[in-house]
Image 1 (cartoon, rainbow, N blue to C red):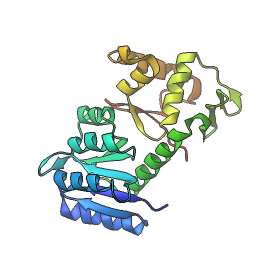
Image 2 (cartoon, helix red, strand yellow):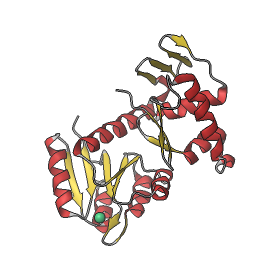
Image 3 (cartoon, rainbow, N blue to C red):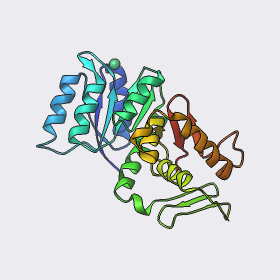
Image 4 (cartoon, rainbow, N blue to C red):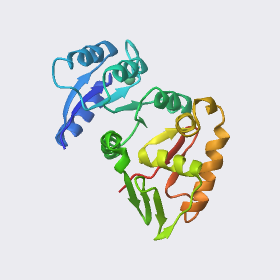
Length: 233
Ligand code: CA
């Protein structure tokens, strides 16, 4: 699959290396080295071909990349993957809440970036047909249409809340989902501060679907952020 990518990165060497790798994969890449360049390209896409994905550095010479995230979210549903040198959990959570699809902390390998791009695109594709989503991986089968879950052929019985939480993670399989997103989507916006709920219910889910709940294989912890359902292979 060949897609149009807008790469926003002011480090020229890194920008060039990423551009080369992505072009080798068959993607067409436009590069912006500042917030203003990125904004101009975002405005121009209205008259040309839209971008399929954005790769966004945060530390830009004329402002914070987060400002671009807000602009992009107003005009596009294409995935935004943040590529940043900032490892802090706070900024990761803020970015996911602001509509970023994923983040990669520098330095990262090209292989990891390509994998995250595939997941982000698949996730966007799934959103349109989430009702038919079926998760199959390593003996775990989750059918969100039939509301059926089996582990190695045996039925898994979940409470309604456990099911909603698992379904939310499955719809975003391969991507980190923040505690706040989970609380808002499963319990409702008035529960945003009750982060103990996600821990409690993820614990219950792990007891039912993990072979070893203490060393989870399917529902992975994103420390300080939230949880990530193992991507479908
Ligand atoms: Ca930078």
